[in-house]
Image (cartoon, rainbow, N blue to C red; front, side, top):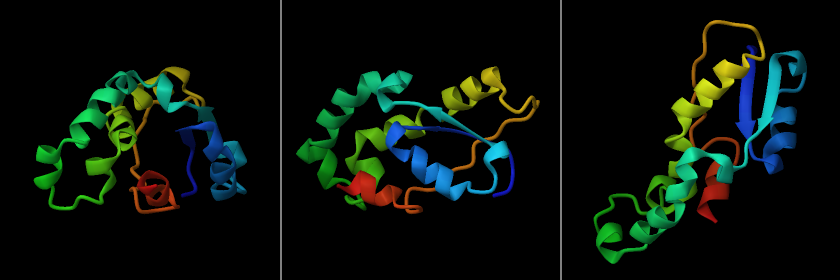
Length: 116
């Protein structure tokens, strides 16, 4: 997508983002954001406990989707508003409008990462 993009990613995804945004470097601001720095990360252990409960797992229609199996996925999803806010405060492109575009968890190998 040929537009300004501020992207918070873990350090191991920086090269991937650079490759995807090749030719748009002047429109790309990569913000290294470890998952452990997200406000919602404090719930990681508790979410993992719940996701491991038999009662929880037996009621899932699709037990393989990441929102059912991976607390990390839910941490990122539930951090969207805060991440957009942080980008608006930094305002790397000096703009007044900010949106979140969800790439989806099946694109660009992200499903593989959360399926391991």
